[in-house]
Image 1 (cartoon, rainbow, N blue to C red):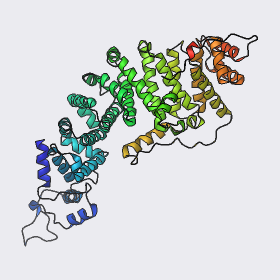
Image 2 (image 1 turned 180 degrees about the horizontal axis):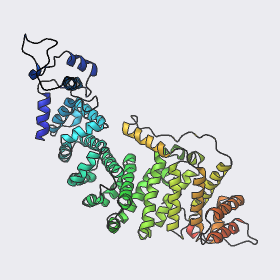
Image 3 (image 1 turned 180 degrees about the vertical axis):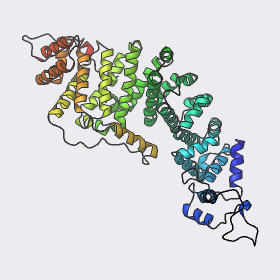
Amino acid sequence: MDNISDAANKTIGSTEKEENPKVPEENNSQGKDSEQIEPNKGCSPPVGEGSRETEPSCSKEPDEEDETMLKEKLQTLKGDRIGETMYSERFVLSTILKLSKQGNRLLEDDEEFEHDLCNLWDMTIEPDVVRFLLEQDVIELFLALAAASEDFRLIEILFGIIGNMCCVEEMHDLFYRQSNLLVSFCDFLSITDAPVLVQLMRTLTTLFDRSDDERYHWFGVMKKVDNLTEKLSLILATSTNRALLEHTAETVGAMINRFTEAEVDYAQLNEFYRLFGKSCLLEGLFEAFKQLFPFPARREAAGDGFDEETLTLKDIKTMRRFLEIHEHFILSSNELYEAYVSEVDQCVHRVLSSFVNECVLFPVTKNHICIFVSISNIYSGIMYHFRAESFVCMVKIYDQLADALKNPPREHAPVSSRSAENGPTAMEECEDAEAEDDGGAFDVETACAEVREAIFFLVGPIDEQIIRAAIRMGQLKESTFEQMCRELRETMDGEPLLYQTCAKLMSAVKEPNEEEADVPMLATNHAAE
């Protein structure tokens, strides 16, 4: 901290504190142009002896001297700008100096300083500013201040700055070389303030998503964090803050992708599943999903006014994240779900019931495709579990997609973005842009194929009479199954149970020759939990 104070005092010593973080270009240039640049004394001829024709007595060539003077002139004109930005070094250093002397004062008592810190937060989208901050060793200062502070707004801003800094490679290198800093940062997972935790999750997600796969192996660092899985699970299970639940799910997904795919080390996979494959995580994920996307009976009781037609691009992407996490554990650690098959099936049904709505299904995006792939893999892993409502939803979704292939749908308005009370922040706007990038026009045929495959895996081990009862319940058309089976024979040729499954579907959709007894719907219990 001493080097920060010394640098700030030295820079600010004879100048007044700047209120604007940006260097005023016009005024700065005028002031610097009026100053005389001191000539190099070693190159000046004695007074009275010089003339225009007299060559300087120094060893520098004229071109080299001109270049040197030009560089000095440019440096003078640059003033105290940070790198190639318009931001002022003096502002940054004075803000850090005041921050180091903050003590127990609350930001709400000093609106001007809070504004300065928010300006610094905004400035850290510039890599040159991030590198300048790293030169001042601010991470240790920020973490020390956060550990000693009870001001959640201050901690939120500090963590927001750290999160922005993680967009620069040098920050990854610092956290990796001094892994104790990252472990200390993760200790704040026990904090109870939602905005602080949102910034913490954003930081971890950025770190894991953007780090070089070969250079950084974060699992070796994160396993040093005490009770990491339990802390994440508790947030998922108990928080009612939408943004926090969304970002925590994103962080869990980023960890899974990073530790099991990007950092492929088969020797550590068993250790990963030992640390992360816990029932508390599954229970937290199920509870968070129900909080974000209430089931009909639950949302009516809560009166939260949740409407399918208000699903945003971010909502669909969040659904995708939850299902991809379940998909991964079902395919890699299936035994975890022996006691939770009904819960994961309920989540799948909740997603499918949304996608039956044309305004949610179209336009088809990458997120839709990934969701259908996850559902197909989930049903291939939890065989012998059948929910009639989910089956009906999938067939209706398939029917809409198949019809769209024949008759391309009209242009659909883009899925809305849910606005924050005070308008979206810069980071939220970036996330919306990212969601839109994921949601570009996508191949309807691919989506149709994935839904067909999911239906195939769902009905494969199920008795024909149960399927027939579901078809009757949903009043599904025979022509839909004729087309579906025809396409399945073309696209899944070679599947051992292909023809048997298609024959079972076609037999189930046809009216039986003689009246059958009612079939107990043991596997179609749809009571909302």
